[in-house]
Image 1 (cartoon, rainbow, N blue to C red):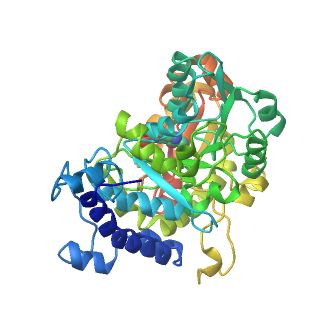
Image 2: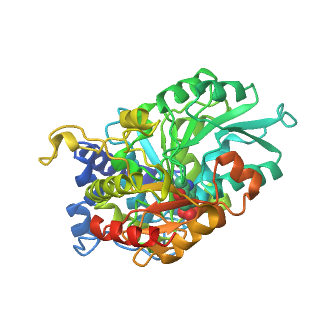
Image 3: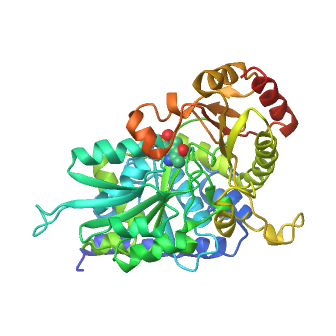
Length: 464
Ligand SMILES: *Cc1c(COP(=O)(O)O)cnc(C)c1O
């Protein structure tokens, strides 16, 4: 490309900055999971040279960046140099969050990853799927479909079955995502991607990521996975062939419960039948700098730094919460008033073996506590109370320490009845499809001592 000499000057000047960034990324890739979570790309040098030595990443609230002259502005707005041009598009605080997530989700992955943070988990899902649902000349009137596990978060169920349908895009539901033939039977030449959530909220569905990714790739399409419940501390789908991972960063990634956030993390050079090289080469950057620039579902710098602060302790927190959850699940499992417990850590759960292949605490083999890979299954479970909806409501109303709230991932234990909360809007038929009965309780175990959580459950079960 022939650039005006003034513009070229800034492009040359930016080479040093680009080199420093690449070096910081290469350095961070040598670290263990916890070190990446604590530091990300924010270095001592950067703190001292740019941020008055501040040891915590700055929360840069400015809406825009000033330029020295017209040439620098032109170079920046053409994305020829790193820029914080306008905070809907790029912002330093968001940059640190995005790189920490790209590195954590890509931990142990041989290829390159990148991330685009969003204002919510739902915005991350929308941003991840819509680039694959576009029409282009020659294909303007052809039908478009995608295949999804029906065991997805209630908001996702509605986004796919209502919002995408409004746009003329067909969702084909897979009822039993652990059954590969069901996925295969839904795919045709108009299918743009496969989508699954695991472990799913609230039913803890699980599927063989590697097998579903292979199936997708055999048809030239990507696999998109919602791994919100596992977090990269317990499972990293990109290592097993998935192309894109979406997260509600509102949930287990952040314990504090201080706001809504989301992210998508993608492998570079993903598999797609969409004729768009930029999309294929670096999906997350493509989304960030083009569709999301135009649509605007970006994250705010405040939320980026709050999320980053919680992420620093992600691995030890998920370990601890998973161990407490295991105890709570075992208690519920033997309780006479409990009809059924869905928790992947229970050895007699039908998906326990499959989940054990994928859900492993990061770095447990180098953790002096374990010195071997250990399975951890997260802190979300669901269970069903004997005696139907009325008994379930009595139990629920009797909880004293555990909060009644439609939330999960908190450091405080939280419970909900999905049929009257998260899955209310999808209606009787949608609930039957996703198997959400009125006596199901979703419990997300927090950081309290497990004996105190069990005591609360015990006294409430006595009232069911
Ligand atoms: C909550 C949730 C979402 C939606 O995330 P928001 O941040 O609330 O928009 C998506 N997927 C899963 C699995 C969730 O639990």
